[in-house]
Figure 1 (cartoon, rainbow, N blue to C red):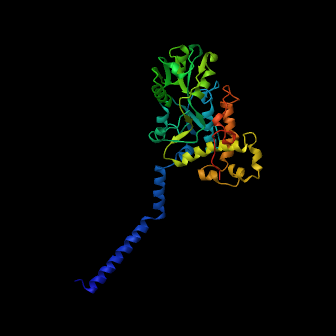
Figure 2: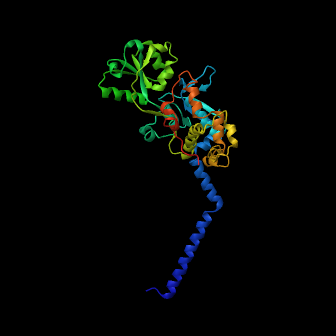
Figure 3: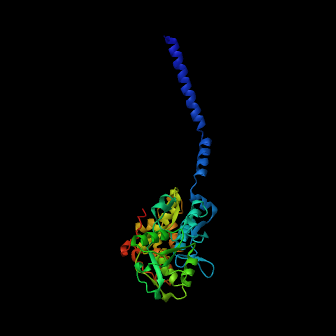
Length: 361
C-alpha cells in the first residue's frame, strides 16, 4: 500500500511535470519561431499568383498557328481570341495587359508545359474533358467558346456527308480530343477510313491542300478560321455534321485555388461587363454611376480585388485595356474579323446564348 505522504509527494511531482511541460510548449511557440514556421510553410506552398507577381509577367501557353484564336501577326505580335484572354488575366494581375511572355505550344506539348511550370496558364483552344480535369491535373476556368468538331473536304470531291468518307484518308492533329472523336464517330458509323496523324496544324493543312489527304478534321471554328487563309477558299466545303462537344477555355494547374480564382473571375468580368453594357470606350463614364451593382463591379467602395490578391480596380483595368466579351469576340472571330462568326450559343444568356457570369458581390 502507498502511504498518504507518498501519494501527496507523487501528486506534487506530477503537477510540477505538467507545469514544466506547459511552460516548455509556450516557450517553443514564441512569436519568432511561429513566424519562421509560417514563412517556411508559405515558401513551400506559395501560390502561383505570388510567383507571377514577383516575376513581373504572365507566361501564357497559346497557339501561334490558328488565325482568330492564336497566331503571329505580320508585325510579329501575338493576336487572337485566346491571346486576348491571356491579356485579360495579365491586366487583372498587373494592371498591364501587355505584361505577358508568349510560349507557342503544340497540342502535344501544352499539358506538359503547364505541369512542369514552363507556362503559368494555358489558353490554346483546349477542350475541357473529365480526363484532363482529373488525370492530367488541369483546372479549367469558364468556357469562353462552345465549339464542336467538324470536317472539311474539297468541294469537287462530291462528298456532302460523313458517311461518304468511306475509304478516304483523313488528317487529324496528334494529341487532341479531335483524334479520339474521329475514331469513335467513324467506328460508331461503321465507316472504314485511314487516319493520317500530324504533329501540328500547319503541316496538316499543307498536306490537305496538296491533296495528300482527302479530308481533315478539327473544331469547326478552326476550320472556318483556316478556310480564309487557304489558296482557294471557295474550293472547300465544311460538312454540316457536328461530331462532338468542344467547350474551349483557359486552364491552370490544379491545386492552387488562389490563382484559379484570379483566372476565373477575370474571365467572368468580361461577360459581366457586356451584360452591364460597359465597354473599353465608355468604362470611364461608369465611374460616376449610382448603380450599386456596377460600383461594386468596378471596385468602387468594394474590396473584391483585395480578396483575390489584386488591386480593387482590376475589373476596370481589364475592360479599359482589353474590352468586354463582345469586343474580344467581334474583333477576333465576329463581324469585325475576316471570319464573321455569329455568336450563337456563345452569346450571353440574355441574348439567347449560354454565357453567364455569377454575381460580383
